[in-house]
Length: 122
Length: 112
Image (cartoon, rainbow over all chains, first blue to last red):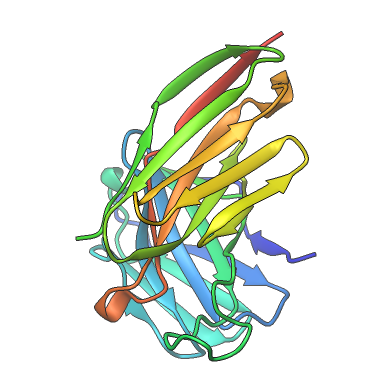
């Protein structure tokens, strides 16, 4: 079974602090994602990575950065935490999705999610 | 921009009822995912489909490519089915190829 592990279920930090959220997956997935989930807004993509040292901005990257030094680990960093970053943060991983049809079985692979980190910024 | 719309936003049912949750999506989205999120946060992938119908236990997912519409059905609903159900479409456009676009979710409560 695929396991996506997020380092904390609940986290409380202060405004201005640098915050690290860690995510580890054990299935050798190429793709990893960070989302935040807010009431009424659903899940929104912050950053994603298709390979080690690779990162791409999602829909709401402002105020965040990421690090992918090893394939199994994808870290989300709040450079200077603010109260509007209080949210549920979810990490996910999947096998590589080939953009060209017919290029093997890796197409349309599901994303596997961690249990989430509920982050409060005071 | 590609979009995914879900309905209803909230749904309350009695145990045993047949439940349907709907999802409509715009052009450029393929491979609809249905996800389940229980209180506490963890998300589980239920189905991923790009055509036809899939069934797993009491859950059935269908997709109509021409109408750009998918449904999730729950037969003989049970209180343990209470959760938020999220529809997500894979974005086929430009630099975000392969990423998921999420609906806002349907909160289902099944009463005993």
